[in-house]
Image 1 (tube, rainbow, N blue to C red):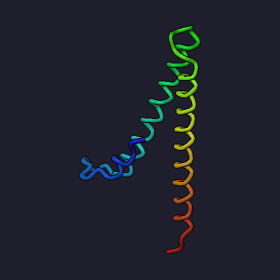
Image 2 (tube, rainbow, N blue to C red):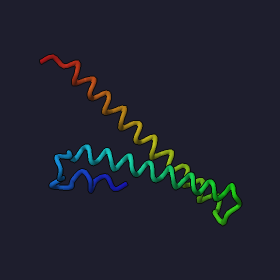
Image 3 (cartoon, rainbow, N blue to C red):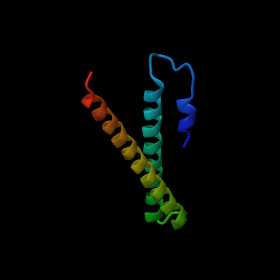
Image 4 (cartoon, rainbow, N blue to C red):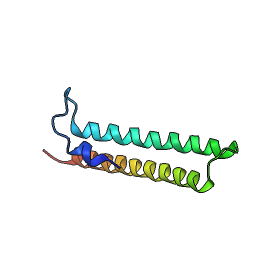
Length: 88
């Protein structure tokens, strides 16, 4: 995953935060991997010239990427809830 380049990019324009950019990139990459896995599986089911092992790798890669995104979301939510519990 190429998230490091997003995190360390300098001068993000338009008032957009680096963190917002990072999350946007993450969602786009996960979406692209899921779309790719869907296309590969369609090719396998249609009897196309797609090896089964490549299809399974694409599906697992999409699954792991989605699980990572969900875990990042969960950690962000936990952090937000912790901040809201803090006394000022």
